[in-house]
Image (cartoon, rainbow, N blue to C red):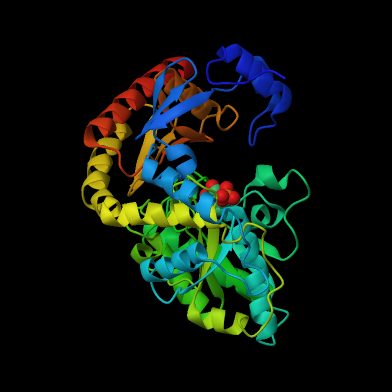
Length: 456
Ligand code: PLP
């Protein structure tokens, strides 16, 4: 067997990768044709690839490396925990100190009375938990017909069968017979693409009221919950109009629908607050968390549950759980990550200093001839690429062609931005400095110029 190391030539690594590694969200032919970019090291906001290129990671991996790369304290926390208790489960009335300590810390950090956590290994698993949890909750309450979960088109809630069904990504539903029954999708609050002549505020209200219409159509006695990301991330960093969430909250209260805020991206500082629910006027019964919980250093997710729902669930033996629910190493890493976020005031600094600076610079990109709008919510931002600014027109070519070209130009300039159709998105580590933001904007500008030349 070949010994595979960082020192192998890139082409050989890529050939082995294409031969044996099936990648998520990647076309197999692209791997064979071009090979994958091989990342070998990272520090702060900078990735190094196998060719020695230093790349500014404006996506924090997959929206997750909130404290930045290279924090040895987390590696040490993992090693300590592996030596002491590398694994034990939390099934059948057993527990361990890292799971207890993290649950206690989460109860302290999270808003409202979200005082209980059901651990999972990822955001997808946590949303699968939520499907079973809300349906079991209503069964316990003597209302077993309340099964339907209402979500939004173009939402992203994960990749497992359950969570991808909750999500509203048509390309995902087209593969493998999704969604599962009893999931209903209403339209998203995406004013730029779908708002027509309405003001954003009118549009936000109209889209929220689709929830009420759906409840009437499906029947109040059949609806269990509504799920939404405070700011849609993977759908293209879609910041909802200010009228949207208060109206959703009003409707959930009126019809006693459980409200699930999926804060897998938004949580732990991404929007400049610890949790976005507070700033968007959302009082969730359940909050999904993952990503920033461990800054991606170890896989972990969870469902935070409010007192009332937990009390009902504690009346039954919830036949649900994952081998890695509350994995001790992941819990220890998450605890260390939260300690650093808190003690170094990273979230507060991101909200107070970094977010306003990034906003000011990011919005200058709206002047570019290729850009229709620049939106930002804390440290997650998006720009819409358009052939015609005033009409918010879309490109005639297949959606995503302009975005794909722009992403290629970003890579060529050592910048990782992601494209979602013809929207370019960013979500850098929260510790990004002002000079690094300047570099990000400069490279994004060059990428836009180059993309413009190719698209025109
Ligand atoms: N929910 C949201 C809002 C997400 O953005 C994601 C992942 O991007 C998930 C859930 C799924 O999380 P995971 O990839 O950890 O399963």
